[in-house]
Image (cartoon, rainbow, N blue to C red; front, side, top):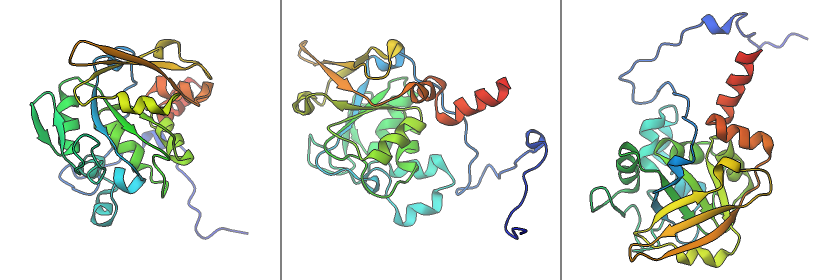
Length: 244
């Protein structure tokens, strides 16, 4: 039976050019994400240490923001704006150690990103629960987050982070969440030799000259590690197709 709703793809899709108005506020062509490197996982800063529940709505608020779902740069301006900052109990107000001032979370992230400083998000239990919006993983990736470290993940969100080439990690000891200080610089060790079932190590360099080290676990299989090394699952698919 003929499917009236089916439209066959072009025989040679590679020859098709997509034109988008560069002044559009709703549609934006996506550039491939750049793979994370071990060097980028040193000297990082905490973007936000989220206190309590942090759902996909806290990460990427819906409502009027849905107008910008096709424009990653614009919708990323809502990233974590309703998450609670552990250090001051407020929403959308975090200290930035590039400017020395408090900023909205997305603005602080961009300042770090544009100065070559990676950021980490810390969270508590069942992080990323709620509707399985891909934007809740794409937006942190776009604004420069390298790793999300939590006590536990909602399963679908953890997978979405993997697909976007981010590190989604969990505390081996949940009490290590309490060790993160606002002014820490952060390293993640073991990325270059990351394999399934092998923990990574977080090093917190505190401003007083002391440090804390602890292990974090992950659930990446070989294919998912390949996604991260390629920059995202889409990048890996593209590599595979070009190799054929």
